[in-house]
Image 1 (cartoon, rainbow, N blue to C red):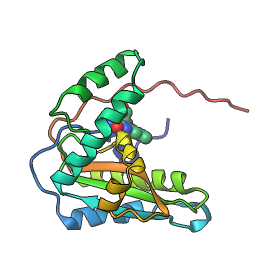
Image 2: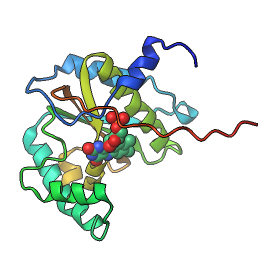
Image 3: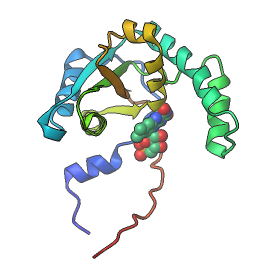
Image 4: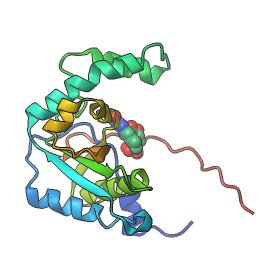
Length: 191
Ligand SMILES: Cc1cc2nc3c(=O)[nH]c(=O)nc-3n(C[C@H](O)[C@H](O)[C@H](O)COP(=O)(O)O)c2cc1C
């Protein structure tokens, strides 16, 4: 095993954080996080992203309220433990899919770029790692992609017609950081 350097230990110690301190995140910090994102590699060098930064709690609440019943519908009949647990959370009126985080950044991908999903996912990982290295927590909130089918919501979020929601990411100074979920041993084929 190669000796760990700071980049590798940053990668390994990042967690999906679902508990945030009541402390604002400055625009300067947000811009640094996005700047790390745009240094990701992209297919054909297209850089097919745009970003929507949401600090307005009322907008986040509206998004959460839109997504929760849709998710419950999607999970109908799914009875694995994690889904049952999640359904219980979704049914609670006070549950916020964004965990009351102070900032939501949506990475949008240009629908016309051939590798838009990959590019935006790489951008998102850069952003989460940069945030971690600046002392902030983050979590990818895939469930928020469900706003995509709501034209009113897309309008409110100022999402242009030729862009789609790829990576909704929450950021904030951390409250409780969860333990690392165990990783499965990688399956490697050596030739
Ligand atoms: C594409 C994607 C979608 C995710 N969506 C959610 C989500 O909607 N809500 C949530 O709490 N966590 C979400 N997560 C976070 C995962 O649950 C988390 O990465 C996983 O449990 C491993 O934990 P770790 O990030 O701390 O290593 C998502 C992660 C990814 C990559």
